[in-house]
Image (cartoon, rainbow over all chains, first blue to last red; front, top):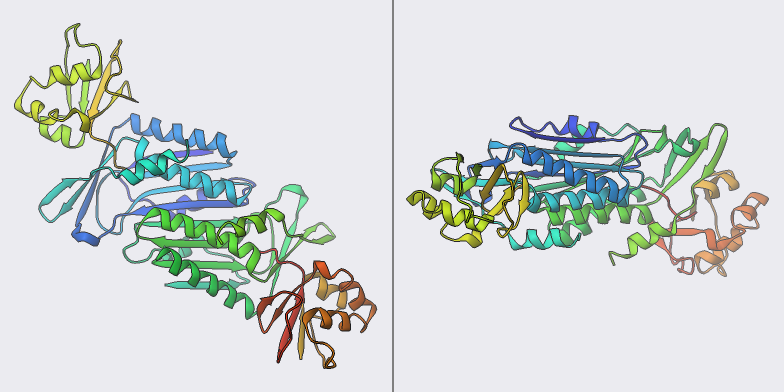
Length: 145
Length: 145
Length: 83
Length: 83
């Protein structure tokens, strides 16, 4: 089962993690990314490319599915305005054994950082700034190739 | 925050994952291990060494905390009889960035497999068998040293 | 041809979408960016540093030297920062 | 000294706990296992292959050649299989 959702609504972790358990799964790995409030950020807005975003996420989910023989892949990404503490992204992978689940989950978050059309804008009070990509994210994605 | 629980009660994933988010966490990684029903297993019983188990889990949580500068560590391990689909173990780690959360979560499940006093007995109908340790688990734990 | 803009490229240009009909000399994405830059001061500002731009043709990431071919939808945007 | 058994060691011996008072010649865990093996056919069976045994002294994992010292609690069990 592959589930991909790009949504303005808050991510319901309880529902998503329960839904992520594939039949026969021995292990489910998940990653949840949240808006950090350190550094004075008061709001974070996620812009994306409707249509292409969903296709890109489904493409990565399918690659992970084949590479690690997964039983389920869930990718939920929020878009629009968020505040510190809100969940931006939830990824979960289920496999017969833990290694496949853990590795594919790390792969998906690394790929998602560099290969899906999302853009983050931070607000600190009235001041808005688009986030620059980090070289470390590019390096993280490269290690899977 | 370090939370360790060794319990006969079912693991409530929704509560545990919500509780695992440390203040200021940018990422939470989790791993949930479940009883697999393949191979004809009808019941799994987890025996443990009361007192030593909790101390061993707290020890590993503290090591991960120091090594990855974590914001929270949660380890919940069920004991007693379980059926296929039941959750055996839930591990979650929260950190400012994803790499620390993902790595420490993988570390903890590898360590837990080899360094905590749990023993699994599988039942297939009337036939009961204690599970033998797997060499791959030992190798997985070794890679962190 | 539909051209889409995102993030600060969109903000500088002042719109997220326009329809354009580039001349035949516009062969690849870099050519298109160069040609679009003349449309307004906002376009010129958005496209001042091509090294900071990324692109997609018909919803697939491509390098800036990718040929447009029969592209229906070209998107120009900054490097992505999701997750 | 309290001796604890777990998993199939416990099952073969028929109890998870006994109090014993080993002689001075019993210096390390391997000596203790050897000495305990004489207590019953169940003990003998449980301890037939020392390579399959693991141990803890006062709730810390130790190798079988670890000295007992002033140990209050020694546990003998198969390799662990949790998680």
